Amino acid sequence: MTEHSFTLHRIQGYIASLYLIEYRDRVLLLDGGARYDAVRIETYMKREMGRLPDDLNLALVTHMHPDHAGGAPLLRRRFRTQIAAHIDIDKWYRGFRGASQHLIDTILGHYSARQQFGKLERAWYPRRLKPDYFLDDGHTLPGFPDWRAYTAPGHTLYDMVFYHPEKELLYVGDLVIKTGKKIVLPFPTLFPELMTATLKRMSHLPVKKLLLAHGGELKIDDSYSFFTELLPQVGKYGQTFFRLVEPFCSLAPDVRLYKKNH
Ligand SMILES: [Zn+2]
Image 1 (tube, helix red, strand yellow):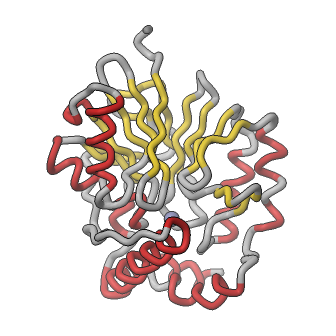
Image 2 (cartoon, helix red, strand yellow; image 1 turned 90 degrees about the vertical axis):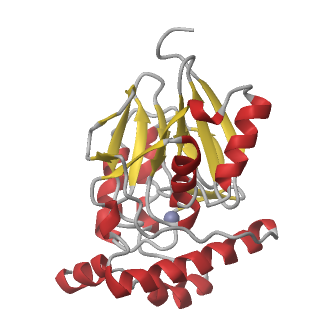
């Protein structure tokens, strides 16, 4: 095993898939999971990897939704895992409107878990992440210099994706979702123009494999056509349910500011 070689592990969390990147002397988590995914990670590391959860050095959080930002604080409390996320991530649920959105998103998370997996578990989590490391566009991950962070706004304003240039591997969080055989954009897409720019930008990144939070691992032949073919979907929701729910997903202060200016 060289310094930068790793083994990829995938765990099915409460709502999202979680990926553990195991190096000889350290472990990285993509991304923070729902609250009790912290326990799933602990169990998995002990049973399947034969490692102590204290080896989990860093948890990345792509954005503040409950299935991505709920587990990391518990991991930090229990195993001193450090958290890295977008430099402005804690602005997302700010103020009264932010707090209301946080509550609604947690309820929608439960709804999604029930619909998909028929399960329900406690998923309340702090609306401020307080990351140990603040990431900006192009930053190298602390302790994992073979990975890069890129800003990827569209779903929320502070989404990030994480890229491994050597392996041409991209963890997309909620940027792209696979449901059945279909590849779709996330609900909600609160910033359509920014989503378009993000997809165009990603189309220029050499990618052989995508790691999805919803839909597992996906090999792709040509990242340019993969991402550009998604462009016509921006701003269009296939399901009536999404169109009905969208106003309840637009409370975060940044969405209001954006709508005022566009
Ligand atoms: Zn999300």
